[in-house]
Amino acid sequence: MPDAAPDPRSRELAERYSAARDRLDAAADAAGRERGEIELLVVTKFFPADDVRRLIDLGVRSFGESREPEASRKIAGIADGGKRPGDEDVVFDMIGSVQSKKARSVAEWARTVHSVDRDKVVDALARGAETALDAGVRSHPLGVLLQVSLDGDPHRGGVLVEDLPKLADRVRAAPALDLRGLMVIAPVDGSADEWMARAAEIRAGFVVDHPEATELSAGMSGDLEAAVAHGSTCVRVGTAIMGPRPLVSQ
Ligand SMILES: *Cc1c(COP(=O)(O)O)cnc(C)c1O
Image (cartoon, rainbow, N blue to C red; front, side, top):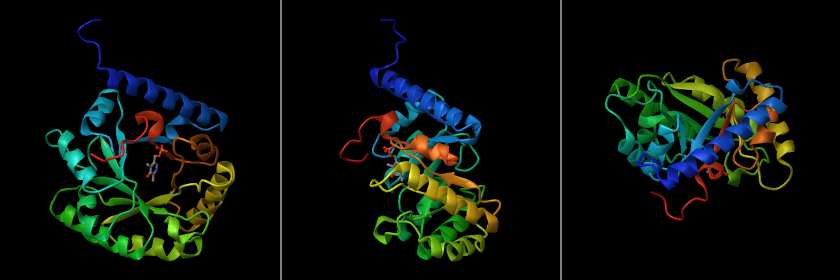
């Protein structure tokens, strides 16, 4: 074996990342969409900073994390000098639910939070982002996607469709926040295609009132094709690239 052979984990990640990109290319083709309209966010939750570094070497630039303080620790572990959230080419998004008391640290590293579903979180992120902007820790407002409940079950997270307009207004009123669009997680029961069609319908109504907020974060390892068919602009892929998640987070 040549000396410069990548380690086995890097090879495995390279293969899986390449396969995920092929899937996304095929999904975009099948939907008659430009591949460039769809971001591939690699979800690295539970996996170590070493894997994030390997993925950066493979050309990955957008990552999704779901928990504090795991995310902060990991990002500190890979930061190269002088780079800051929001103005560098490697970005991290928060895709998991945000506890109010963690909002301040999330606002220091996240480009966008995908999982905003209630007033309290909006207010906490607004304060955190303002502090981070004032301190020069971030250079752009914090992106916000409103997580919408597709099945109306409040226990599973996500704002109810009827409460969406008020929540959106609250984000729009916060100068340190930038309303970018919506996020959905398809419930496991039923057809992914039908859930994603429902997401597309909700989004179509939403952009009438918020024409700049066109992003739709939808689709994971198991349902990215359905999401892309229904207009997803960001798929969040963990398992298909990283392999099964370890039981204990990093
Ligand atoms: C973990 C997670 C993902 C990735 O899921 P996979 O099925 O592993 O691709 C996507 N979105 C959210 C909100 C997650 O928490």
